[in-house]
Length: 475
Image (cartoon, rainbow, N blue to C red):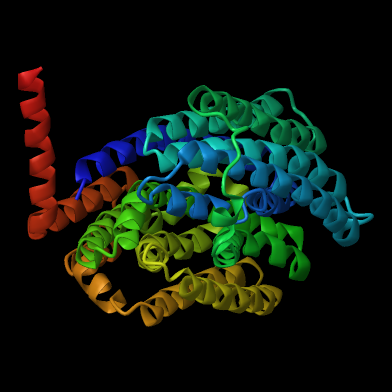
């Protein structure tokens, strides 16, 4: 098990994403305070639509590229040439389809120009960023993936901050925000062209094999976080959308970090799955679940127990109603960190169709719940719908995977009891503690319990430290 390479790649992704995600989140929160609840609700709809459109420049073909590229004797330059051509075609189709949808759904609405300026540049930028990110993930050179994401994220954050400093109206802010996504795309394309020619022809049919399942599965994965703003905008007023988007913004940022670990494990899991080394696959998958679930729990702790303080600090008194939503939605970070490894277990063993069925069920149930609960209870109903949707994913991933229960048991046997102890203390002894004291204490306790009780994590950590010390001494 090449755990050293996985952790090295994960460290690149985590170090860059930590900075970028924090800066981008703070910029977005600053924008929320600047725009107010209703205008921020409009911006949230634009962000959600842009996220959906950006996915369609990929359509799941990144997964088939990694699948084919990790096979023995794979011709990576040829695969990348075919991959780039398919993505450019998807981008053109996405731009046309987006324009048609905007005209049909938002004709005469104030949202229409906002969507145009945010969506169209994002389609091109996301396409170019995706080409580079896929290549460097496939070749496990994730320091370049980290660089691309960093530039793209910082450009977006800088745009938002400039908009506030110069007091730009919502439409101009949306336009410059959309165009800023192109900076990361240009860097991505330049880095890839230094490594590989994209003009070389390849076996395009190989990339299309099983693409339907990946496409549907990826669409649903991308769509699930966007359902709230998109559906609530139809059944509730923009103020409720603004409250929900403000509260949901924090968990969406937080569960990117466990997702970064998933990206580092993904190529090796695929390799073991392709080679039918199922015992090694399960061991690696268990380690992935242990690490991701622990990280998800750590990320959730401050916002689960001290939501009021964080909302007032970050958003101001105007968004006070979002504090209860944030406390509920913080649980999503934990559920996502468990669902990711369970779903990856299916995908990397060639069972993508099963994962897709679970995802489709979740998006159908989620859409219905957002519509029903959102129309009755507004943003609070949206929070209940989000939690229920994650529950559907968890049950479905377990039911579809023969080793799912075993994976869940081995991965959470230590972390879950440790978190239960922390939660008990958070809701009782440390409930009234200052958040800057209580949250670190609870986090340290969780790390101490997990590391102290989990022999495998201790062994892996000590092995890596000793290997680095030996390398330093020999240098």
